[in-house]
Length: 270
Image (cartoon, rainbow, N blue to C red):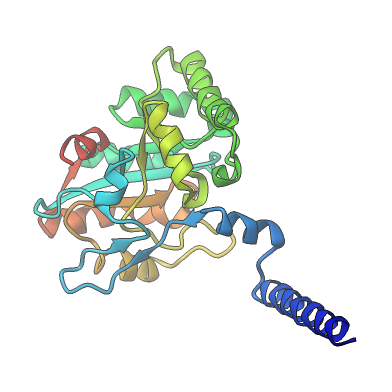
């Protein structure tokens, strides 16, 4: 009888713990799928600006990322900015952005998905003809950390390479940005195996919601004080605000003494 009671008590305790864990997961707004991804090593890229020198720290250090040919920051001794844009689709603002970049003689990197290349081939060709770099943002913009099979991971990147070649007649440069900044160590290893440099960022702001675009003042409040040496800046080319402020933004950064580097220079200096 004592053993039976002990067993029942033990089962009750274990069941209670399991229920408590489930409630905690649901209460925090995390799905079971998301929780499993987190437990399996999924990381959402994030930044902290709590440093005296203004250089943010990332979810992983520059030294750790370098092991996998991954980067989020340039040389912090150089007053240089690396400007990048993510583009899942064309929202009518890229032409103006390209005009502004041309005016300032700034070469940016556009991380594109398959939909963008399919629907806006002329803009892609213009990026190429004006000296910008096109990077790989995957074919369909999935959560790549949820893809455990290397061949499936490879298909997402190679499908975009093939589409880009069919569209431009040029080979895609080997720069990769994980959709939503979600990745795992296995992802970094897989991209490296495919010859890619993985590019995160050291400065971004909430510019992606088309239904709630930041004001000019809100944008400058984030992008001016937090600019720093070696900054890899992420903007979205779908943003109306970005298209409107970019000329003034680049001028402000230039007045602060910054110059603009190309993404290929970033990986060479590490």
